[in-house]
Image (tube, rainbow, N blue to C red; front, side, top):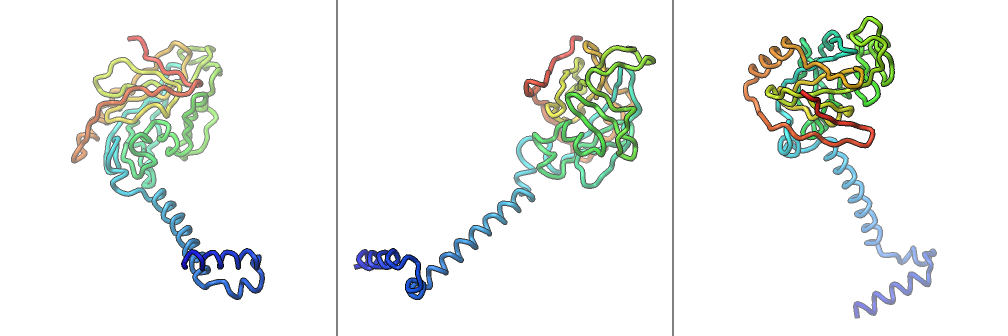
Length: 257
């Protein structure tokens, strides 16, 4: 009987073609079902968007370090044509998890999924530091106010200044990093996003001629980094991850000792 009644209802809908007669006889639960479907759809969209923008504590405090709540320190150096530039200006923004302190010490204190775990990279630091451009073809050091500075912006192929260590030689953007204090030979890469931020990381942002191995951060920077880390109540250590192979436009090599 139920199937027969359903068949008659379907036939009636088809014959009416959605006309006035059908609209008068259309069951009220039809509209209720539509309302429920639309409401559930909107709710799922809202919840998905909220979950994306507000990851749960479990998702950002577990898994690959550094997790939200971690505080690590790293040392930075900026080298142009064999000469170290002045330290990057401190950036103590409360909305960034990757900031700069004095003496070229980077503070790694992730605030969200955007700069924690596998997203905690040198490339992400460049994105969070006002005016800093870290790219495979461009290195741009901003002013203290975070604005572009033409005199400290470098592109692949440009010549080193005549008063530099490598006068009139073509330079290229390169990044050298030492994952731990015990690392003696740096790894060189053109992709800043392949450099995972680790505790006691030392990294140099450089524009040097091909074949030149950038110098590590200064002793003063390293000492300040170690002191800052020692002042953290609880520290977490991790074994540095291996170098990630980047796209074809990126090269990663280990400098010869």
